[in-house]
Amino acid sequence: MSYHELNPIEMRVIGCLLEKEVTTPDQYPLSLNALVNACNQKSNREPVMMCSELEVQDALDALVARSLVTEISSFNSRVNKYQHRFCNTEFSDLQFSSGQTAIVCLLFLRGPQTPGELRSRSGRLHAFASREEVEEALSALQSMTGGPFVQQLPREAGKRESRYLACFMDAQEQADMVANLSTAVSSSSAPSNIESRMAELERQVEKLTLRISELEEERGL
Image (tube, helix red, strand yellow):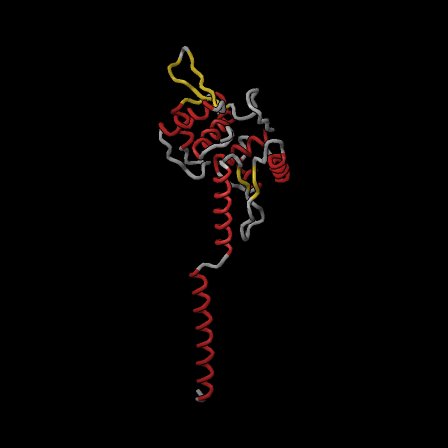
């Protein structure tokens, strides 16, 4: 397992640390309790999780062991706090721009998203000047050494933009997720059973109405 490969809870923990480092720097690093609350936050999270303190602590222990998070203890506080070493530190080989970091953070917290969604949701993390700037950052994340760090998904029917997925999972989990998302896209683009049955009923009604009109004409009605 690569030390960059993350399970869903580890991804949520890293995403929260990346987010809070920028949005609430006066409260960063985070205590375990603050991190649990951030992981289970109902706004700006997809899916909404209900992680227990034990699950978050297990994730932190695994991340600390892989040097992706560091635990900080203070003489004037009995509460240990945690900060990420995931990217943009002297200890990490991942060096992202502010915009690239914002994208990775949002994908960790909210799953696959389009460039337009990433731009509209990134305001507190990074101010993108345009959707094109988001697309440039996504392209860089796809092509930089050590990557790709994001993957473009098949475009959904009726959508103008494709969504992008963060590539920090086990290779098999990544492949399974892409396959499931692609299946969902195909299903959403095909008519449902109810829609097919409704269309068939409408055709039958139309044929019956025409036949009734023909019979009425034959009888001189």
